[in-house]
Each structure stands twice: as C-alpha cells, then as structure tokens.
Length: 110
Length: 110
Image 1 (tube, one colour):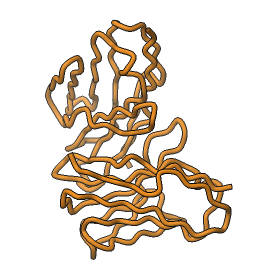
Image 2 (cartoon, each protein chain N blue to C red):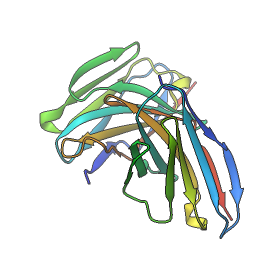
Image 3 (tube, helix red, strand yellow):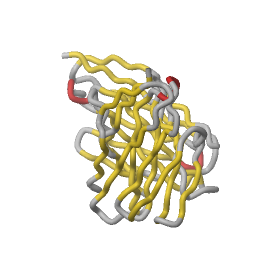
Image 4 (spheres, chains in turn brown, orange):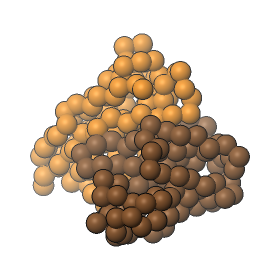
C-alpha cells in the first residue's frame, strides 16, 4: 500500500483565515486526490492531479485551491475559511485502479 | 455524476452473526472498491472488485456489473468489524473519478 501522510491531523481555525493542508506520499504514484467527508456522508472529490502540470477540479472545488509541488506532494488550501468547510479531509493516491488513503485531517472552522 | 446507494444505512449485529451490505450504482463502472472506515476515521482498502467474486478471510465481495450492484459479506462478525463501510465506484465514462456512497454504519456488539 502507498504510504500517504497528511499534516496537520487536526486543526481549528477561524473564519476568514487562510489554511493549508499538506499531503505527502512515498510510493511514487502519479495520481493524487483531495476529498472531504461530512458527517453521515461519503467522500466527495475536491481536486485531483495526474502530475505536477495537471490539476483538475472535482465535484466541489469552489472555495479551495491546490498545488502539486512535486510528484510526492499535493497541498490543499482554503483561501478564506468558512464554517461550512468544517469537515474531515482525505488525501489519496492511486496506483492502477486502486486508491489508497491518508489518515485524514479533521478541520474545524469557528 | 453517477449515483451510489448503499443499504442498509445502519446495522447492529451481535458478535458472531453474518451480514450482507449492498451497493447499487446508476451507471456502468469499470472500477469498484469497498473500504472500511474504522472508529478513528482511517479508511482501509477491503476489495478492488469491478466484477466477479473475491474473498479475504471472513470477508467476501461480489460485483454483478451488468446489474449494477455489489455485495459485501461479513461472516462471524467481530467487534473490530465495527465502523462504516463505503462503496466507491469509478464510472466507465470517466476513468479518473470515484463516487462514494453514504456508507453502512455497522455496530457489532459483544
């Protein structure tokens, strides 16, 4: 399995603040994804990337931006956080047809 | 996007019981994965199963792609099986995306 790490694991921030969530992987997978999970719901795709030059919007990209700094690093930014962005955020990599998920970042916007 | 429905939404079992979880999807898929989200939020890959049947210990899964459903079987359930089980599908029309169901929340009581 891919070794996918996310930092921070938990974060509380205030409305209007800029925040960055970081994801790193050590297995050399080209494809990386950002999802959010709201209570009682499945995951929804925010952005995905095939390589450092290829970034694509997912279903719910409004209010988010991403940066693929290297093959191994994919960051998600909230330029001006709002309370309804409170959620559990997951990074994933993909090898072939299977996705592998990081441990998640629990973000609370007050 | 493709619609993914999981049933039942909630399930309570006595330890040792068997169960069947269902995932229905609204369009043809070339990718289907089952995940277990443990009580700490971590997503664990169970099966990659776009068609056919697989078994891994007490768990098995069957996907009938032509009829647009997949089943996850848990036999001799244990308290460690508790958590939420998600089905995620990749539509044939878009290789790059996954769509998640809302999950089945399983509580196995000792």
